[in-house]
Length: 66
Image 1: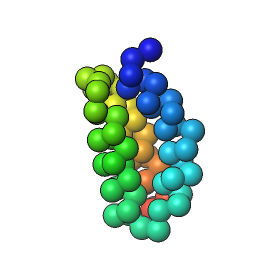
Image 2: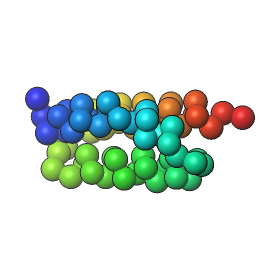
Image 3: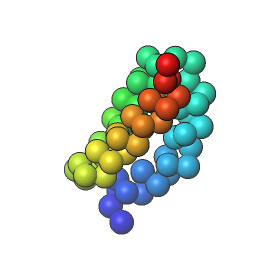
């Protein structure tokens, strides 16, 4: 397991709750940026990171649908 995969597994359990706790879209987008930045440190696994970004985008869209 790569370092990124391990980090992603660490976050996956709490990402949905963290997104749901966001009061607005800007906060959710900032959270996404922070999570992705943390995962980029120390790993070049872009495929796993892109999958995580898409998952977070889906959660944000679901939370802030009009």
